[in-house]
Length: 151
Image 1 (spheres, rainbow, N blue to C red):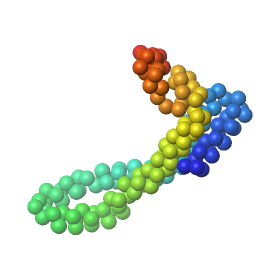
Image 2: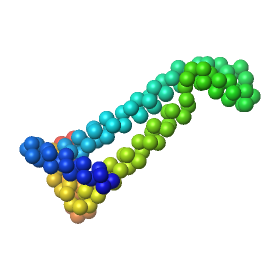
Image 3: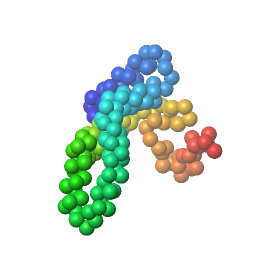
Image 4: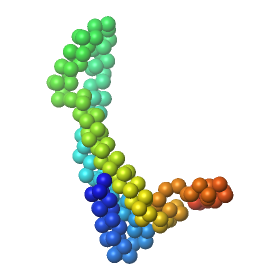
């Protein structure tokens, strides 16, 4: 998370140098896009695996109907079809598991930056990037006023 915080602050400083309004808001968006770009190959592999599994689904259903009641035979023949087609059933979930720590790191970095009090600036109609409004603002009825442009 420390490295993501550093990258976020560098992006914010760079955007501030370019006189971009709402530098932290755009730095968060830019960092999210960069992370999504970095994890795209894993996402692509996951989608390709899911599409390959979907294309084999009619064959798998035929095996299940042909060998109803014989679980071992169904598993063996299904594994054989996957092997012949070059499909790995685990290839769909492993890329997702790899990206989870990255997104958790981004969340923690944003949480740490908010706790440092650096995300007090607004972003368009959102009054503060630090999080929901204060309890006092919510109790007085002003806590949801930033949502009014949507109504």
